[in-house]
Image 1: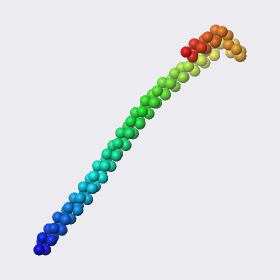
Image 2: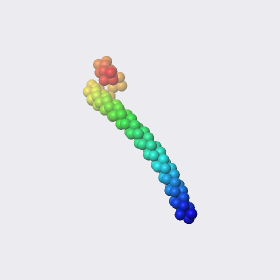
Image 3: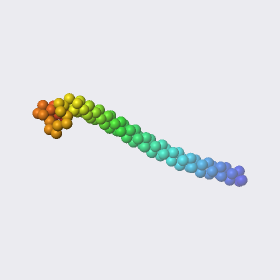
Length: 98
């Protein structure tokens, strides 16, 4: 009888341990799924940031080109100290901004 009770105790203990392990495995799997979802969101955000950074770099380069053109234009003005531009200067300035 004692051996049977000991066997029942071992089986019961193993069942409790198996249930505890099943819960731990379930929790770990949930943690892995949440972590993978967070990583996917992070990757997507980084890709979006890279696209935006590339677009901003293009805009910056275009702006620097315009600034360079305007600086060259200012250097070529006949009389840079005048308040009004000549007709040819106005046309050239308009062409730079098209």
